[in-house]
Image 1 (cartoon, rainbow, N blue to C red):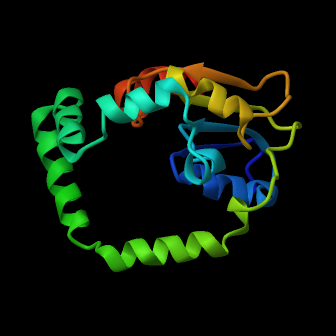
Image 2: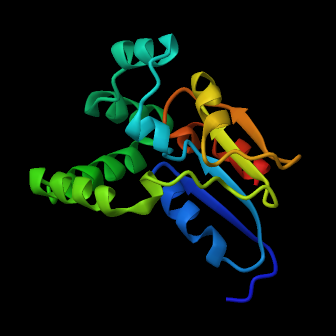
Image 3: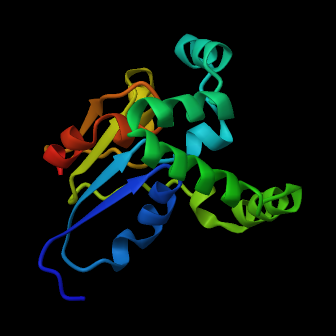
Length: 169
């Protein structure tokens, strides 16, 4: 495609893929990450008080996600969403987890120190308690337009604030 202006928008593990293709995208103008998975959270999770309390008090359980879906979406959409989630979950097993771990061990992203180039502004949307983590991350850079925006109460911020995220884009 010959787009004149490209913005990569990625959520969670999509941030890893965005990072890996960033140099292959023509006319890249910005990166927007919604809680993109960074090296630190996988390889050396922060031991700061906010993280430890968050993990202790609000484990992202199936029940928690289920409730959020039904809180944030109209009932028919929530039911369809949940049924699809359950159907997809049935396709995965422990062997899939092992394949993922093996793939991660071979992926250079996890072991290099590359950062996002300063020529491209990066915007990271995250829960407030993760702001320092992202300041240290491979996604944040010294571009004067780069910023970290605190928003939301859990990993799926785009479910809570779709209009605000659209405005940011």
